Image 1: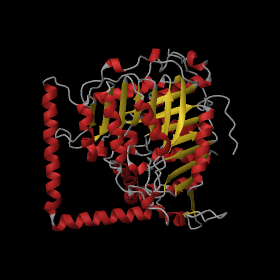
Image 2: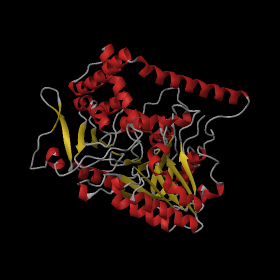
Image 3: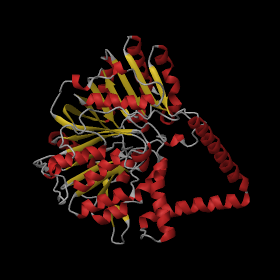
Image 4: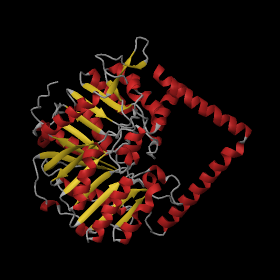
Length: 520
């Protein structure tokens, strides 16, 4: 497929200026207006002068990470959702410990829910002088605090090189040939240039929620970071309730003109995003969605598949990966714009987690992303609608191996990526609400989800009727716990003591609007 570069940034699109528009805005080039909209949606200004290298799977990401950490001379900022207590986890922990002993300032954040089985890995690192913090451990003062997670996967070394990806630290990403488990398919990037300063400040924001703020001397002044290339990008450090990546995803879905190719590991999108993809497809955009065929969280698969039918009806092409597990979170649009990071297309990532993604506006990098996407589709099965309007895998053509045949030689992904099941509530709530209120038509793809939820509802009803205390005691405990927690915070506020993480947000860069037309 030919991908001619657009004459301007992928964000450049025609706008109709209302008569009352400010002269400064009305006379500005469309690309500048689009850039302002893009920066505001993402909550991050543009950064120029960067070099970005695409890294595929653990085979390319892990060696690059280890090499950078081993060469560190001043500082290492390491943030990861899952670090397993296995050979890979122990190797990274030992490498970070060695650098701390060598006098390098090592700061580490791991998420409690994602890494709770491997917290003992960090005893030696702490003894060596590393500042290791565990994000959002259970607290009596926050009964539902566990819903917000630090899902980021970032590393910054000496303020010179940074890494952003969807990969965690685990043998699962390397696979196990003896057990017929392929390496997990995932994508990351290496960044050099001014964007590394934004990555440092994004790390400092989360670090401050787990204890004292990061020493300011460890943050590289933005003005001192020399250019390393000519790539234009945005570092999108999403925080709970900010929804920066969600707003950006909606903007891109709205302005894409030729193609929008998405890869996601846990697709349970909101109705607004599904409708944005449908509208783009109906407008002639080549919209494609690549998701896992076998997930490490089996309960999410029927929730993802419940959204296939409305997408397929609008012309969106849906593919399921045939390997052990697809974990990448990427997008590429119009041969110009790309996104790589940790954000999944679901409510938990968009609204309640700390996530980090990089949006890159560069034609050459977008071509690399598109080429990789097409290569991934060769290992995927397309999902289609049958004549009876049912969702089914497409028939095998040209001798291509079917998903069933391929999986006979592979094993399903092992379950264990904790903390994402809450995202399914969006799809469940949408389907159940529609079933109860008839506010929209339901399709055959949602029948399985309704049967599952019907079984759960009937089971809960039977338990409530026969053994009411089984349900009453947990509800009573949660209510009392919540009441005590709220009362404690109220007392603290009345006496002038702040509660929760600090509200101060470090700017990710100093150029959010400097190069754009000033507002009146």
